[in-house]
Length: 519
Image (cartoon, rainbow, N blue to C red; front, side, top):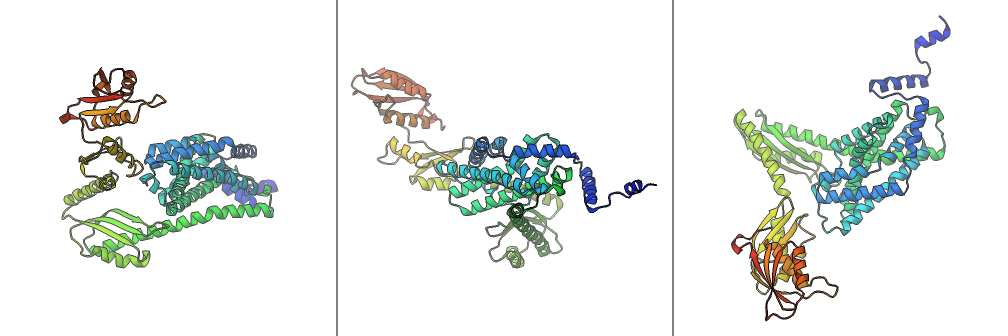
């Protein structure tokens, strides 16, 4: 047996060969394709060339962040996800992961610069739109991105692994890019929202979520790049103080928020585990079913524990017992709330669990409804009735008649409520007037006057679609007819003597007073 053959049988000998051998074995075990030197070099050049900051990249970041913040303000998951279709963040993140795997300080600097610029554009766009938007109330979509949790971290990590694999395979980068952008662009828009509303807690929480997701995705990319052989060989790394400093600085920037989030997730999981143990211990031999255990420990807030228990017995002062056992872990600011449901047998427990889930869903549904009391208090006028349109997210208010008020006053009261009430549109239905005296004089530019606009507003609130209009002889009836037609109201115009020039009297024809539509 020759020396060469003997060496081959023994396998790789040097430590570099050993590392390469085990890297290839692990990569194959994880079904990661192994790239040749030429394929790896070509892939690195393609990824690096797609991570440059230019006008197109800036524009797409701006558009993506704009759509994302609008979706967040509307609390529309579909809009938020749709905004990600135009996000360009995957390119520089892929370059950052490849650069980390290759220990390439210069490429890390270039990718980090593109990511930072895109993040700045996203935050700025979110802040500007929040400032100019008439509706900037906190929504469920915004709250969901103000605090990183274990699920967010898992989504980012899996998105990074999927993105790295798709990049290596050169398949599905666009679709994976959507998932990556979903983990990054909405938090950036939320940072802008927090700055625009001067809520630093939201801004810091969303920024931590962004940095955590970015870290997880970049490190996942680096792992796939190293296992596939796409990263540059260690012997080709250019070691210098400058590049080494860039590498260490970027690693710390990404590793610190990731470590903070992992520590926060760890303490939240520990509190959850201790809460479950303490509740079980409090019931003794009657082991309860613990449903809907909700433990929150924000990075910049106080911890809260809420749960529903179903058992055959009732434990007095359960909340106080839990406070005594959990306070050493969570601190004095802990909030505890446990709802106890008694059920003696299995069938009753099953029904109780179903009812508890239904009640929780109903509570969430009601909590997302219109704030009727706030609206009533903000209007400052006596209200006869209120009802809501969930599809149009509109609240209709029918006030009592206010002495001395005209239709213009009711319209002004409605306009003052446009920027409040959690995204619900306020529409005041004024007391019905069957005959309206309208100033039909047009403005100098030919547009309809204030009197016509007020009349059309009132007709829309009453649901009137057909009117008779008495006009002064010789007036410009055609322009008045066009204004009504443009608003979807059929107007039968008749000249009536005795009216002054520019005056009109509107008679509601449809629907009758008793059957008027509330639309």
